[in-house]
Length: 247
Image (cartoon, rainbow, N blue to C red):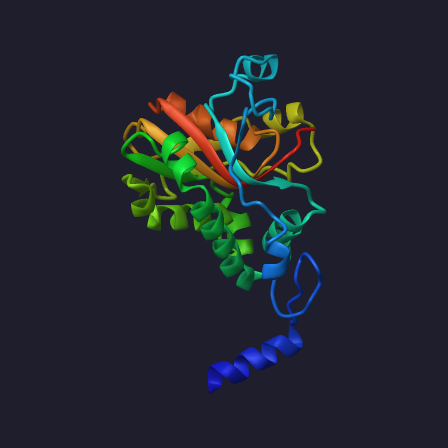
């Protein structure tokens, strides 16, 4: 009874509108979700081309430490998934986290074979969410990358692989950086140099999949991968919810 009253009051004071059609009641309604393919994109981490063999100049010149990057959606701050992620991260819409997990679950279910073959083929696979700077995580109340990683880990039996979730304390963000969105790829790399440290006290696991919500230039994930490689990781890949065009 109390829960029902609380939900009613909340819907009056803080109504929820679909990021796609604007209809009240859900953050992303099923009708709008059906417009998306939920299909795994496995493009080059550097040039974002589907058939690149990681021998492009962008990959070679960019000193990429990530072997491959998978994403389920194309990202643009104006499209449906872009608005969903932006609202979750910057709109203080904490109850949207449940919608995020529903989206991850649907994307996972649609791509089990590809995930098992290309991202979870070696055992054990260790998932490492890209960390937030502590003050930013306190402000936001959660790390969306960890929410995604936790769900992947809980569904490990569906891909028939042993998947472990590494603690937040292992890879930490030690340098506060301004938001990356308006910076060029070069400026992003410079901005993030020295931003992460490996603090587990032991060597990093051999096989690591970094998890984040959005991948564009790859500067953040690649800097994490550089630190992991320097501390013993051999195979580093990335999985994210959405991937945007590079600047």
